[in-house]
Image (cartoon, rainbow, N blue to C red; front, side, top):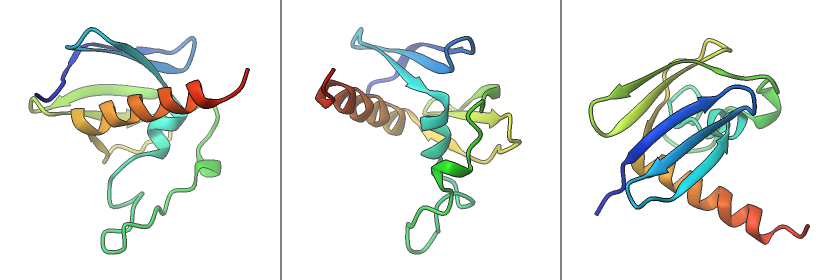
Length: 109
């Protein structure tokens, strides 16, 4: 069963997306992390799959300026750096949530 967002909000005061999935779990993903994981051809080489966009090129104050659904399978984000070609499937966003949560849990306090 593919999970889909039950609720999705851009919390600009904390610079995170808050996503609640249909399994009831809620995750927060930093804007900069999501921007750095853009899967489009401007950010990832189409043939080699090598990442073109480097995280250090992304402004710390990056923000989404527009969110819209791409059909019923993905989220389209327009960013404050004017980048607008990335489409994040629900599967990709859920994978980012799971990976980011695992990284947070594995880091010592």
